Length: 152
Image (cartoon, rainbow, N blue to C red; front, side):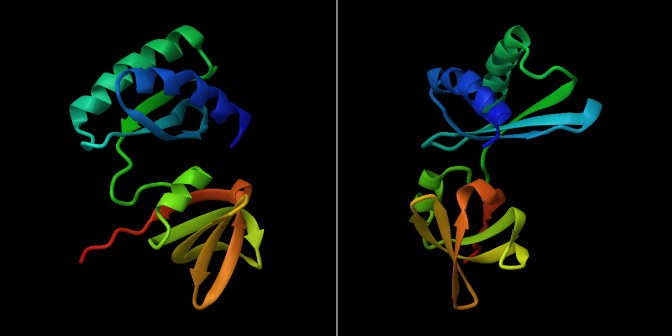
């Protein structure tokens, strides 16, 4: 996780948790005037639009005061949804057995994209089974990871 994301996480997580939600993860997509700060929240009872609105108002106030992002950006608060993004080793461990899609920052074994069964974690690596081959992907090299929803 980049230091900017760590700073944002440290700033907003206590606010989100004080409201009774879990800060599932944060994405910051810097794109000049069209930058996007996306915060995923979760709760045992699920997330409704009202929940996102409540968290957005509180987090927005903290971000306005602390001003951690120097240029303009859009704040988006969302539930993780069915194609739940995974950010931490703990999250990967919980979803072992699920189908996942993983994109790496830099190629590993000649490829950046992996889709297969999440086997779990080993130390700082995410273990994924793709076409009968097990890959150990370092958590620090993962750019994006999502659960592939099942509709059975």
